[in-house]
Length: 374
Image 1 (cartoon, rainbow, N blue to C red):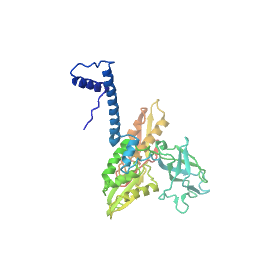
Image 2: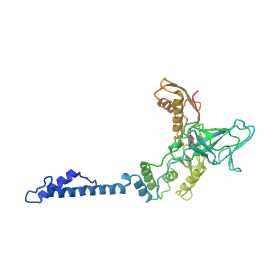
Image 3: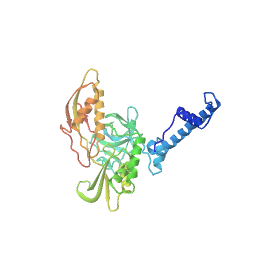
Image 4: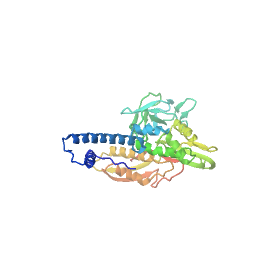
């Protein structure tokens, strides 16, 4: 039932009418009179009570709560707001004299941008350069470069940087001369908003005590609301028919999600799966299609700046694709023209060497690769 609130003027007018109607003789309720003063005082209290009622109503309903009141509401049901996530991606370490020695890159090795945004090397046991025996990544003698995953030391969108922005070694490494990120990092995010938490609360409640796909998906978002996922039933990771098996493909937009995230998602999903159902939580098949194009700008535009913007926006588009989504060829052209009003022509556009969309495929995620402007 809707509650109608009244202004001070309306409240006072109603009180004057009620008082006069209840009295057989004319009352002196003119401005400055004792009767008017008493009614105005009571009307003021009425407004205060209305304000208190409004505050109570806004805090006792999730849809009207904000900030800490949203947190306290959902926490009563065992749900908490997701914190911001740190940007992740890959960097390439290179030696100018690779034949002379090998190099060991330990977990925790730091690299940074010119503006001192710091990233640390993290473990990925599936990386070809990873050595379980050494607990580190190894660049063999004779191999010029290796590519390893990194994670920003701080959470939030500040860790999202353009390709090539990570260019300094924060930790000296024998046998390594340079570092760079070939693709932009775009998956860092700030903390969960009130609106996003309200939406997730509905999914959370609806999935309680239900061994459904929705429950599994909610279990994934309980680990991080920024995870990209695909849930596939009755197949194994190769796509072969396997009754009673559920494969959960997980990515964070980088194409190289950390082992710790995979383990956390497995634990969360395992808590809601039905008995006799097996689960597999794995990384998707990551494809990093090369993009080429030639961009022409007029005299008002700076070509290098516009190309950097296009490269970052293409990375954002690809890194934001859901697992199993197709990659659109025509979107690349749209992104290029949208980068600046100074762009006059975009030619020679290719996606993975072709001029067609990359098809949707279960368990496949298209992520940012190289962008070559010729």
